[in-house]
Length: 199
Image (cartoon, rainbow, N blue to C red; front, side):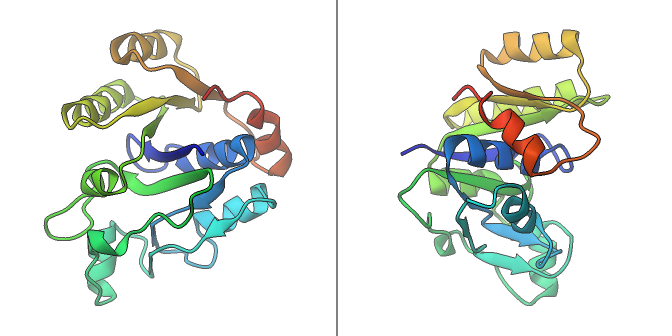
């Protein structure tokens, strides 16, 4: 069974859309280990709406505030510990991180530590904006430095051919999926991309 962690180069770059497409295309389960804020209508809610057939596993930590996990947990009187995270299934699974790779989970550990703990290959999601090439390469380099296996990259949003060419050449990662700017995301749009993934 294929299991992947979907990691982004930052926040609001399309991890949930990419996760939905991967969940649909691979007929996978979905799991977001940490949900910060919007517990009722957060990322798992959108996966259920966009991929109704998917099994969505509950978050290990569902935090009330839309902040970085360590800040949200502190407000809720919770300490996030790596030992609490256990992969919920042996089936094909898409795991969506909260925020970028170096987002803190507690006073000492980050998403990078969670990635190591879960020990699954990364699918890196990038989105074109001023500075995104730098953020993408930095994300790639820190994963590489720590020996994290990477399955490939998803390019999301407005196209930037020269920037995308540089990213793919520098990283050597395969392009798993190209998601274009869409006026609306719904079940039909997610399904239209599901057979285009290369993983």
